[in-house]
Length: 137
Image 1 (cartoon, rainbow, N blue to C red):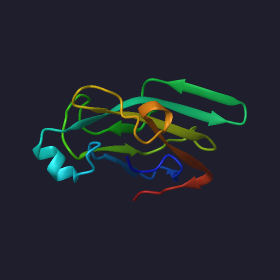
Image 2: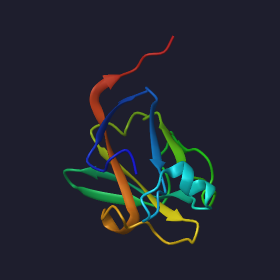
Image 3: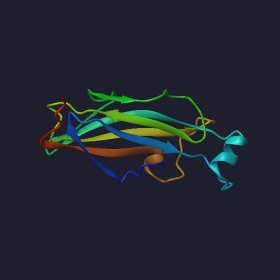
Image 4: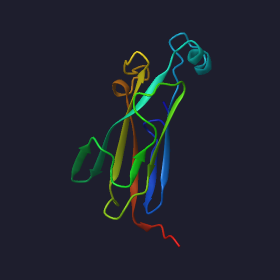
């Protein structure tokens, strides 16, 4: 799954940011994603949760924060699979780090645990800059 959970993104109030979550099911037979797809192996990426993180604590939600959207639909199976997170942070979201988490399931609806990352849950972190804004004409 990409991007890696260790990869961090920086967002600015009023500026759109896009992050593509991409997963490939190459099976345990170590074949290419294209060959696996031809053999019927497919997977789905689904939104799980988002969290707002500050020095005072973390608030987790099972909905996306205001100004964000997740492309596509859950439970659509292809190989490879890509879903795009688009977010334009708004005032009041600055100075927080946000975690966006997805799960990856194969066509048998089993969570992907091959990566060893939190049992099939993959998260990226976006920090919203303080005192920085995009201006539009």
